[in-house]
Length: 66
Image (cartoon, rainbow, N blue to C red; front, side):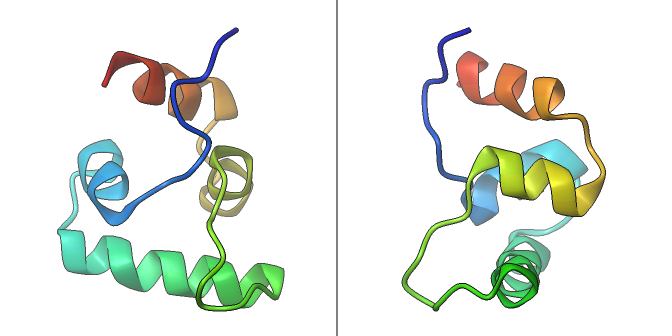
């Protein structure tokens, strides 16, 4: 399965969850804190799926369609 992108951005979270982009930024910061990442590091689709409880296949499917 080919992934278009490996990184998750606030706009992706907004489209996947239906919440606001501001919520997406907050969630990314929460995920970074959870995984012990620095502010400049990216969040992968796998990390987002693990943290949010959304199946990784669903996240990857979304990333392939955009």
